[in-house]
Image (cartoon, rainbow, N blue to C red; front, side, top):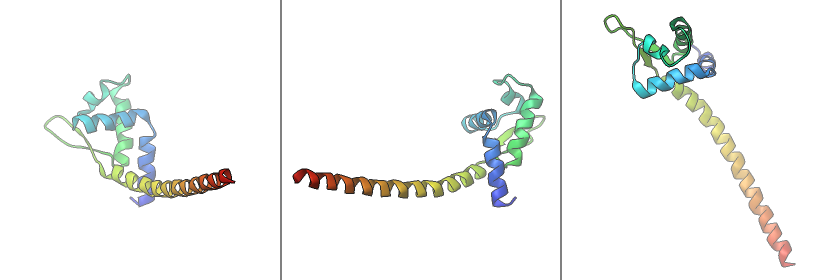
Length: 117
C-alpha cells in the first residue's frame, strides 16, 4: 500500500472510538479472540468483525490461528508511521512557538526600556 493510502487508512481506522478501544484493549491485554473483543461493547459479533476488517485493512491488526480460535493481534507499524507523520508537524509547531517566545522576549525588553524612560 502506498504511504499516503496507508496513512489515510490508518487515520480512517482511528477515527472511530470503538476501533480505538479495540486497539487499546489489544495493547493492554495482548491477543484476544473476536468473541472476547465483542464482550464490553453493546454490539454483535458481526458488528465487531466489521470494525476489525477496517483495522485489518489499515494494517493495525492481524488475525492468527490457534486451534479453533482466531486471536486478533495488534500490529504497531502503522501507528509508528502515524507518529512519524505527526512528529513533522510537532517540529513545525515547536519552531512557531520558539518564534513566539523570541517575539515575547523582544516585547518584554522594549517594555523594560520604556519603563526606564
